[in-house]
Length: 286
Length: 286
Image (tube, helix red, strand yellow):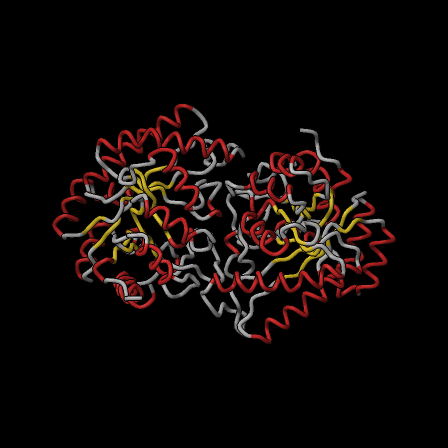
């Protein structure tokens, strides 16, 4: 395989959230010659939406995704409406910053007021996700803002996302927007899907329908010591990143390669060290 | 649904490995009126195989499974042969203790001498698993000892088992023993498969082929604080255990309900408390 084009490297701002605010991250990306960014809503809110949009535009950065919409399930009608309204705001913000797609982390089991699971009915939660995406889709088409369903690793099924395989995300796209991959597609994050024996087939399926909206990179460490914040830098784990990139490219993906690294270890590093490592590992290990 | 028959409760001996040796566990099961056991090889080795078989037989316990065979992938021919030979010994031991099935935890990526992953080729590891089971099957048929492939949660794909869904296990059974569910089937552990949107369908598929050899219980806690040893007692987590039992029964399963609880929290409890809790939770929460 050819090495990846360095111009495709994008940095998800969660990767540097412990070191820098969004303004500093934008400046650092320019300093390192990195062309893409994917900001999180909380960081955007702190800097201000207009200020964020202006700084990203002035820096000439491509916005590979906006993080994030989703979290559809709720225990009651008021909760569902609140999720709907918040997701519409997320669409508007994604448009304002010029994002290629709004990434959807769909939510798990509905939660009570203390944030604990309030149900064991995973099938019902999946129904709420389907309905929530279906409703948001009308709003997002008008914006227009492409939506990307991100299947999350099955270890997050209860508390973060009950869409847990790319097949399941593809099925949802078939059901809700069968012939409109531009409006509703998927985000392929290697951390969540690398283990899936159907991965190559489902990437190809998504590609045939024009659904490959985003591609996220990090690595799976052995051992993994924490379910949330122990993701690995590319090359430090066991994921065959070049092979998966090959599947993405064979399926027609030509978008950015976005590094999204939730890692206590890398959050403790100097931000410039993180970025230079991302550049070097992207070139050498993916 | 009807409540589960208390006579179907079985205890996997890992659940009590911190409190008692195997002799004490057998005595405790009798004391608590529990009818089933599933011993681990290391515990059997400490008590002695003949002594274990005699004590289990004298106690009138049903052996719902023997833990475990598997770990097929290896970096070289010597490693593959060592795995083959060790698996044959596991078959012999399972016969000696009168187990209903030998549970196979198939192994992940091949490991180097220090136990670290020596490859990123998950597809190749899966090929070694297929070949290893195929070879063991001939030996196990002669024994005779039914084999049960246990799909493990995707978070163990790299280091413990690269068979990660029930669909994948069913596919392996189709390939290796399509018309012989009695020789090669599956072990359904709720902890590993509860999240799977295909679970009901794949349980039914396994049932149609007579492949449902074992059913393991515990629960998924939210939050889960450790990837290995933070399983929950039935009722303390988010798995809809009654629903999954319903799917098992609808698919024809009439075997034991085996509690397998890797839990630092429950290993710190008095063993009799663990067993009385297992009995009560089995009746009330599954």
